[in-house]
Image 1 (cartoon, rainbow, N blue to C red):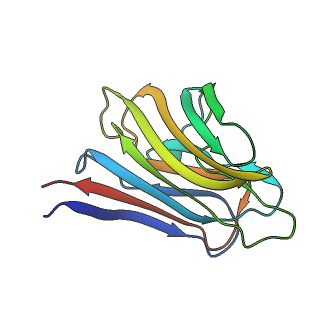
Image 2 (cartoon, helix red, strand yellow):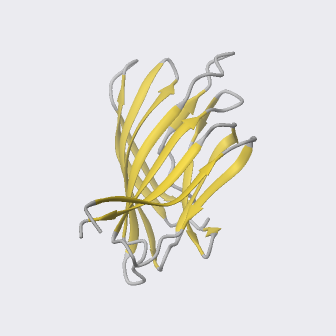
Length: 175
């Protein structure tokens, strides 16, 4: 095996979905990469909600912390801090502007410790999206404060995810 990325799972929506899950995280790779692209919403501003999965089930307890910096084009930067939430928000915050249904949002995240039952699962992400009157480019880091094995990611929006969204999970290898 050479250095690189190996696709583990991928979902492409063919109809409106309330939730998309990718899985397959195991002990084969220490670090995984998540890529989310082509996100479009039906209605106004919405925030992407990301959760870990255990045995394929999204974990919804108040164990998610997130901190980051939102780099904006319409105003000064924004500090992002969510403690004891039921998800990681702001990993892709999308705003559907009026009749502009062609807007798409994207983010890339790296997943750490997901396959380690003795440590908290962590995520670091960079995204670009349309928000309010400008562009929001958050750089965020999150922790899921339960020491358990997590096998995937659940991604939802506050409204349905439209056709054409793609969520891909990769294992990163260096051997």
